[in-house]
Image 1: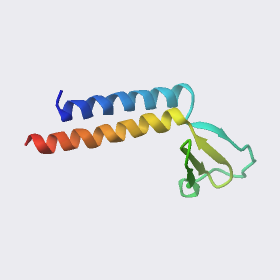
Image 2: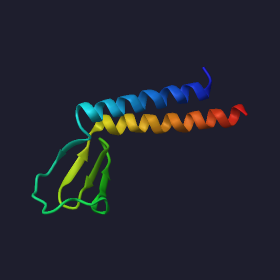
Image 3: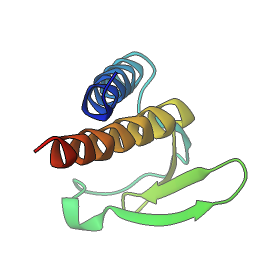
Length: 94
């Protein structure tokens, strides 16, 4: 199996699991429930921090803080790595 095919397979599998888990279980694993007056704007969303072991990504909508689901994190990372591998395989094939 070439590097391009391996990358494409990892990208497709990672993207499939990421979308499936985000739709089935939700993107956020947990969060605070504070009342926020008015609608949230895209500019208010921000990355709060990335913690070490186990890797945890926290983000905020300007009012509440959420934790990104580990299944979404790892499958998204697999999709990104697959994309890089497929690009490297394509570059070496030409």
